[in-house]
Image (tube, rainbow, N blue to C red):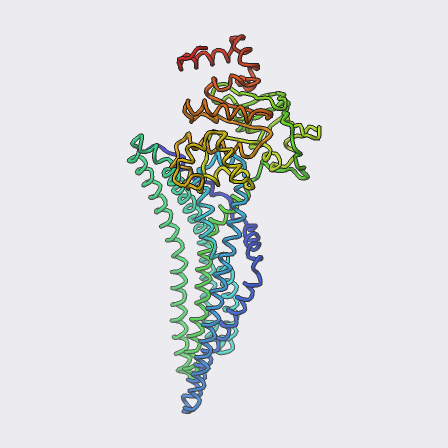
Length: 600
């Protein structure tokens, strides 16, 4: 089968970056007091529990041989008290850490989403939405526990090991040495397996990302798939990606399980050596029977935190691949951002100057070269030309969706000054631009909310007035709940033309000084478009406008028409002037008129 873009894995060659741990500690540090309290509670319960083997030793070595029956009940009550304290403190700590864990998830989600909101169009142009979603949802959920319980448990288990070693050597130094003898072997194995384990989980992260990206795109494009009867091909691709996910996951689990297996084998080996040594020395009356049982309990308690640390380490290595992807997204540069000291753009007049603008979407590619253009306040500018010539690029640059490679764009303010768009804040710039892109995106919610999206303080009356201007009011009132009618994701219950009318009303409601219409009427039927033209003309009056239109008949009345081609402006003038020149615009217009059966 042909290779597709979802087969491509992201680079795995970057070594482990210790700075990730510092960033993890940053999130943990926001909840340090709760985590410190949880640690103290756990440590107290754990240390208290270490006295239970001493009770066992005392009972078997002193109370039982001396038949001190009256002392058994107090010892039993102390033993039960220790267990009760450990359980109560452990429950309190678990609830506290569950709360902290969710707080950490919230913080990471908030920071990640806020960063995604600031990333430029170019970031989303080059990545499937599914690969972004899996980082925001799956990966954050996966790392939540290791960022809270994992850190606390690591510290706690280290403290446990230290105290257990102290108690063991205080009980019987020779047997204590036997117990800790297996630790260097286990640590050596961990250091050997670590690189393979990390790489295996990185591969699993990549394959899972590929699968989620393909799944998201397949669901989004299911109608097209069914139209072209692509179901069998899509299922085949899905099977290939799912099989890759399964294979790398099984390999990663296999490697991780070797850590647990090694821990279990080491523990049992030490157990055997302990009892062999204990029985040998017991026969020589060196060690009492109660002491051997107490050391067996301590051995269990010693290797239990060691095993727990191995499991935490396993989980940490597994989730480190996810953390790397999360922080990698957070580290994506916001290449289109406010420069330090950027000023607020004052109210503008609508006058625009493009001065020697150069731009290309990729290195080595040039879409616009040395483009200069002066637009008067209130002037309507139509941009026409072949697909890919740079029409949408011009308005995208005006909105600062991309950075210029050269030149500058100036807006004249009501203060009489010219303002470079790179010197002002993006928010103050875009808040004075009304932008309707070719893709009419409708959000989940009511129609009222969708129209009010760009101006949250608009009244219901203002929303209805905007809808009336663009002729959306008629079909909205026919819906069961009118403006309160709910629409689902992407407005699938609406026709494409209705979605464009809603987007149009949303743009008009923002009352911009500069209006940008990118193929604004491409999905509206001819009858509705004729009604809409009256509303558009009323809106354009007194505003600067940039209109990109496929149907050239809709832009005949614009003040100036620019034919974009050959990386710049090939022709400029009114409709009549360009038709009289009989150049590129004339050829385009007459060809379209002929195809549509109209008079040129």
